[in-house]
Image 1 (cartoon, rainbow, N blue to C red):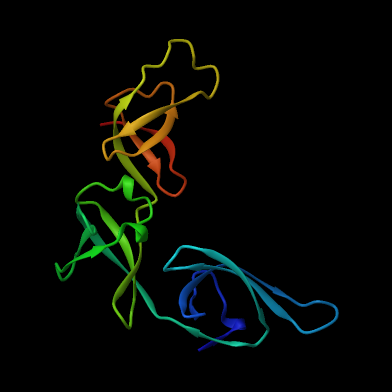
Image 2: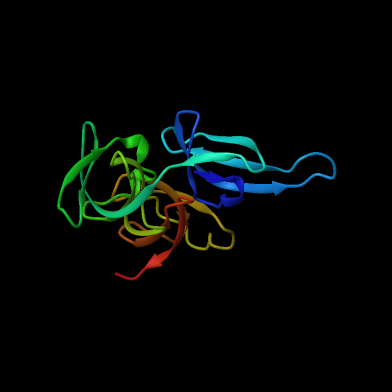
Length: 188
């Protein structure tokens, strides 16, 4: 159990028969009336973000979660198969729990969040940046680099993003998995 005074970013709560993580909160003390806490909560099961206001001092049930490193192995019809790096146990996670699944390469390290009591996987997070090869993109026109013109590109994992006009097929590029944006070219 925790009170509203214990709220912090990333705290996991059991609320309305679901698991939520706090992504934003603000303590408010109006000039008249009791204090309260405004929160933005993200459901770990559905990914939906809700706004909720708690009265100050209210007790809430916290959930114990653990984040563990795992390795992505392959995709099957029921989802994605991962392996625990310490026990070598394999398990499958449905596609809706994996953020940025189209940037995953076989053998890549990922962080998986588990509910500690039930050992059920909640979310799978890729590293902030990944390096992938461009398998297809149109050839840029010479001299068309004065503006920040972008063109579509297909990566080795099948993901499609927009890249600057000077990026060519076969280039290795760095991608921010949180924003799905091109960062820079990487030397091979």
